[in-house]
Image 1 (cartoon, rainbow, N blue to C red):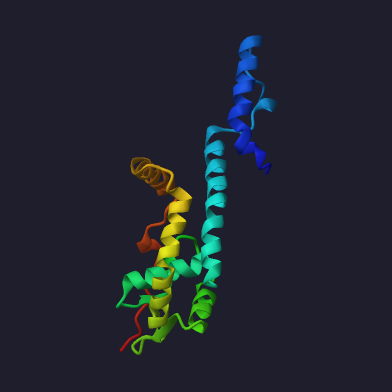
Image 2 (cartoon, rainbow, N blue to C red; image 1 turned 90 degrees about the vertical axis):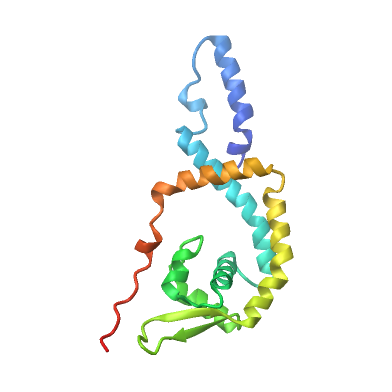
Length: 190
């Protein structure tokens, strides 16, 4: 995908429209940069994500974490003092985690989480944040807040609320309800 595509779109299209008005005809398909309005919206969303992601990657890398690992720690902190079943944690992550076991392995190796096997059902593994994980999140808090301000702090609060609403609306038909994503294992007979 050509990076100049999205940046130059509006100026290019205004020239095409002006030229077309002068000549009395609509711009031809070759002059258009997108196949549809939906494609333009999606590609703008993708490009925006790419630009904003760079800020968070810089922050998380300085703590030797990925965005996905940070998100898992944040979810575990929110659940504390309770632990979360592995599948529930995977379902709540912002991005799909096809290999939640490996993600938890890395966090456990770093001493940030612990696994708890249930005595009544050894198939259920629960994950909990350790004190070291809590300390790390506390150390990261100011940098994460600064990151959010760098990413979207230039927008007014009302615009942020509108953006949040539009993104939720765009995502809604494609979301799988949490109850469908997490199925508890069948309990073992006692």
